[in-house]
Image (cartoon, rainbow, N blue to C red; front, side, top):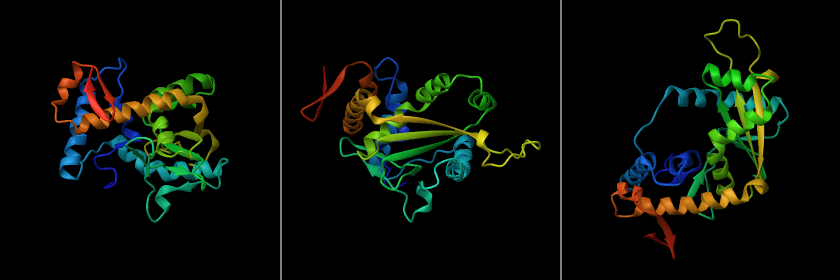
Length: 233
C-alpha cells in the first residue's frame, strides 16, 4: 500500500477516463486524491462491503482457478512481498492478483456481488460475447493497465466468480465447483492501440496531478503533454 501512495495504479484507471474524452468531475476528484497522497505520504482510508467481500473471496478464486485448469499460478498474497510492477513506459503501477512464474499471464479475480450480476454471468444461455463485452466495459481500463505495468505480460485472464454464500442455506456446492467461475482471456496484441491511448492518458493525468493549477480548470480546456510539459491548447 505504501508503494501505491501517490501513484496512478491499474485498478484506478477508470478514474482518469470519461466517455466524452473531456475532464469531468470524477477525474477532478481523483486528481485531488492523488495530490493529497503526494503531499502527505499516505492515502485516506476507503472501505466498502463490496471491497471487503472481494478481499475475503480472492483466495477462493485462486483455488478455483487452480482446480479448474491453472494448477501452477502464483498467488501474490502467498509471497513474502506482494509484487508491485511499475511500468517502464509511463508513471503507472499495478499489483497482479495472480500470475505465471514467467509473468506472461496475469489473473484478475473478480467476485460477483449482487443478484443481477451473478444471474447474468452464470446464465448458460446468455452469449459469451455479451458477457465478454460487459467484462470489458467494467474492467477494460484495468486490463490495459496490467499490460502497461509489465512488458512481459502477454495475456490477462479475468475470472468472475460466484462465492458460496452463508445466507443461502441451500448453497451447498463446493467453492471449487466448475459452475462457480467463468474466465475471459485478453491478449496484448489485440489491444495495442488502446494500450497506447491509455499510456498517453496516464502521462497526461500524472502531469495534471503535479500541476499547480486548480483542477477544476482542466474541465474547461484541452490539455496535452508536449516536450514533457503540460500545456493548454
